[in-house]
Every structure is written in structure tokens, then in C-alpha cells.
Length: 261
Image (cartoon, rainbow, N blue to C red; front, side):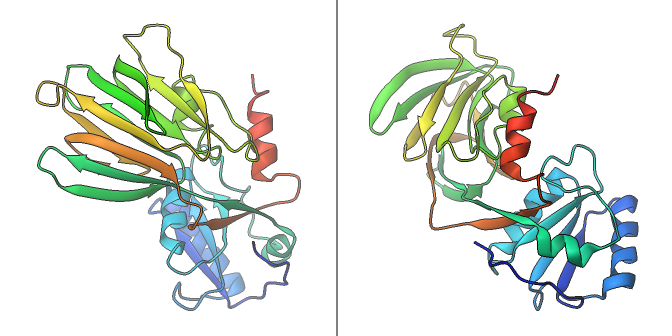
């Protein structure tokens, strides 16, 4: 958790996506508040959309820096409203949300092992025209012997408003300690809508008929092709702090999203 403190000019690293809008905002902010390298910064201001915010979150893990995002992209669910004015005051008053990722361990058909972190979701997706067939085991017990689908995902609460929501999964409050397990275009069982799992759950996905039905696994923006098995669990030893303007915290945004028409 970030201790309340007064932020000053010269200790902020401004990172921006490649879009002209984000780059223009970065130049303006640097002219007002000074430029600090990522390597020496105490805080990061990310300029772009949710995708860039996700990239920034992964980048700061090695340094443990808090991230304050401002929307210079499209949706901006993880971002604050953009304004170049009064930035230091906004940073000082910002509320912190501490996020823990999912850790994915994937094994490919060649026996290669790949590991990655996901702050939004881990998803399995069919690679070709054939539907994937996936066995789902939770805490050592087979819960679904065969799911025929375009894919399946497990989401963090913070990510439950992203791909999970688009796949008709439930939105989960940040404090709920629950992970949505959501099918993507489920064919059999046709009416299976998914499940809510405790955050302590250990999930194993096993791909059936791997030669006929190649399947990829994706953890945020890390993709592993031709997987045979994927295990997923929450990693409480890893965390990142994201800052939000007062009364616009992540918990409030997740609740408000459920009443969006």
C-alpha cells in the first residue's frame, strides 16, 4: 500500500502510448512538471488507454512504483480523466488500489513450459476453425470433463469488466475474493454459464484432441500457442498499486459498471 505523501515535480515518470494524443499530452506535462526517467522515478503517470495501462502495470513490477493513469485512449476504465492542471494535488489526494495478478503456467505440445502474469484474465482460445475441447479441474477435482467452446477464461475482479464482461461473465467487486470462470461461445454444455471461484482456487485446463483442436493461452498480452495444459492461480506475492481520483476508485467503478445501461 502506498503511504499518503505529497508528490513533487521532478519525481514523476510520464509514460505514453504511441498515439499522437498521448504523446502530445506527455510533452505538455513534461513542460509543466519536469521530466524524470523511469529508472529514477518515484511514481509513474501513464497516458493512453486501458491496454497501455496494462503494459505499464507489468513494467512497474520490477520497481514497485505506483501508477496513476490518465485517459488518452478510448475506454479508459482503469484511467482517470485527463487534465494537465493541478496534477501534483491530484496525485497527493489519489486513492490506492492494490492488485494481485493471476499466475499462468502453460505447457505446449513440444513440452515447453511458459509462465506469465495476468492482471486482467487468463484465456484459452481456439486457434483454427475447430472448436476447442477443454477439461476443467479445480483444486484437484474434475468439475467439467469436456467443454466444447471457442474458449474459456478466468478473470481477476479488476479484469471482470473487460473480456470477461464481453463474454457475458459476471462483474465481481474488488473485495469479493472471487474469480469468474467464463466460457466463450460454449457449444457443449450449451447452457453452462460459468462459475464463481474462490480466489484461493487452483485451476487446471487440459486441452483435449490437441492435434485436431489447437488452442492458445493468453495472460493479458502474453500468448502461448499450441498448449496442452494451463494451470492458473492467484499470486499474492506479487502486487501493483494503481491510483485513482477520490470518489472514482476502482471499487466504485466496478460497482457503477453494473448499473450502466
